[in-house]
Length: 104
Image 1: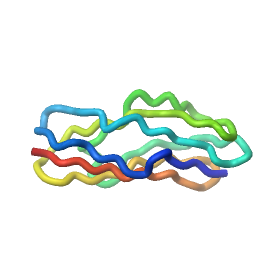
Image 2: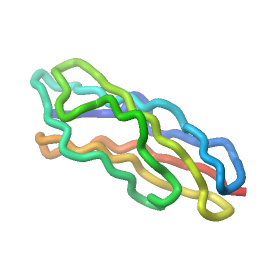
Image 3: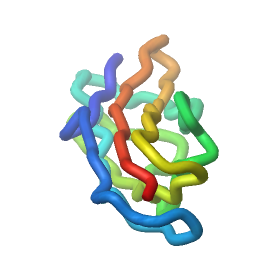
């Protein structure tokens, strides 16, 4: 059982702290022949700079289907701010997308 992201790297345009911007919708796809249970959504790296919103994935994903969620960037400091979006599943795998933004 496996999930993956339609794009593994997302970059936010530079902007000042105190404001947030949606990097974009990320699609998580089930590339296996069986349903998977989505067991966790998390932000790694510099988690205070990113939040998950508008998650319509739910707790399971049928074979060959996908779901989407939005990740917002709201820098807490100036400079490059890196993060990772992780989606874990019951097959023991974790789909990861790299997040990168610049705080001004």
